[in-house]
Picture 1 (cartoon, one colour):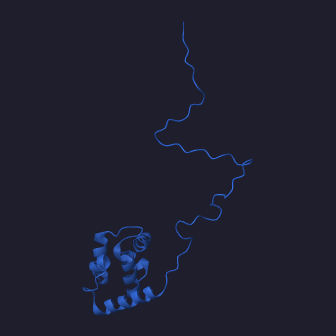
Picture 2: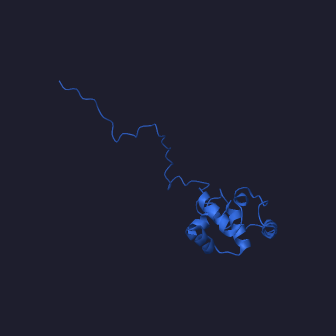
Picture 3: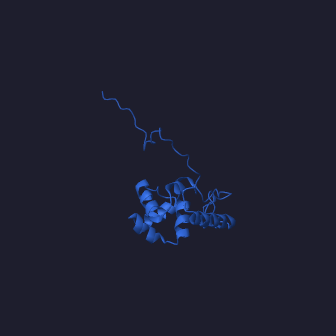
Length: 137
């Protein structure tokens, strides 16, 4: 939904600030909607759709049927261009450890202490010192 909101905003030639002003929300909210970090409020979406001249069906399902013909054509052209250009992502791929985070292949027995086994949640913590049962006579 966020990608379709971004596409319609760019086709209409609007900035995120202008869309935020029309929707009555902050710039970070629009950015979160477009980035997929936040869910789009349906009341705000309906207000945007009425104000900017698109349908909620386009945002929710990608249905171009209710849009103006010229707007639908521009959206199709933009989507084709976006599919033709590869997406460049910053950072390292998911699951790849950061440099320096890799465990050593060989452990130096003299300088590194042996790894401690992890505790599970149901085990009681180890006692500091064993207690002796004393009898009083």
